[in-house]
Length: 343
Image (cartoon, rainbow, N blue to C red):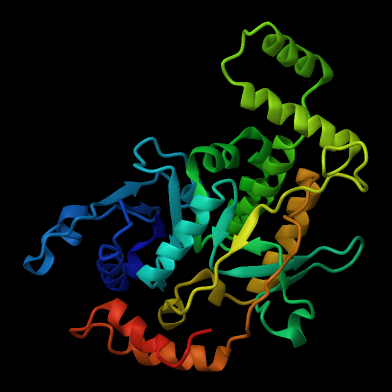
């Protein structure tokens, strides 16, 4: 699923053609928020070049131009797992497969390819760190945000939560700034995970145990999980009176290191990230989300992987994109980009 607009139509066709070649893609949904939506059959024909395309393309017209639209619940979605993408990001099919495999192992997490770090010191100036691989900039090589310009999540749970009344003020801020919907989603993921890990009331637990004792429950695993949560809350992470320390929330983010990727937004100049003070805006909105929601971002996690060279990355991207209209497929060009060793 990708949020897009008319200025990106030329590159969008390359983008769609590429992802149609990825074997695990069930459907491509273009969330159209700016003006009249194009005809999907005309712009993205199923038999382009005489070769049948197995992956259908659906254009979803939105009533307003809002970044929140990318997370709108969609009853027509064919799959529980949705890969959110920006329309200027091309990832290799094999990296998508790796990301999807990671999500299948951890369907309760936001699994993505683009980590960031946001620091919100009490009473201090918020920091948004875009290059978490750069030790001189981040100092820690940790992340607590995954950008949804390339991330898998369970749309059946995450999207209704994002659009719930609890996050209405956050969505209003996204519309005010025309930015930060991805950061808000990270707050949502963290808050919903924390809510799910709260132990049920003593009365609810007693009722569940009574149902099991009398043989009136068909889901013993559910009451066992609820009981374990209560034990963890009372005695520690191990659910054992002898365990030390308080309960620790499970990780809610999972970074998958792509071998390489291509971003083309810097060439068009139409991307939000190219605007002045973009990083300051994102730091400030994270601070405002924390204040209005009374909750925090996911806990920081270590990257635990090798650095990449940003200068070489950008140079290679420019070189590859300059021939993107040629005969070779985007996947082949990305393979060429990856030949120098990846990052």
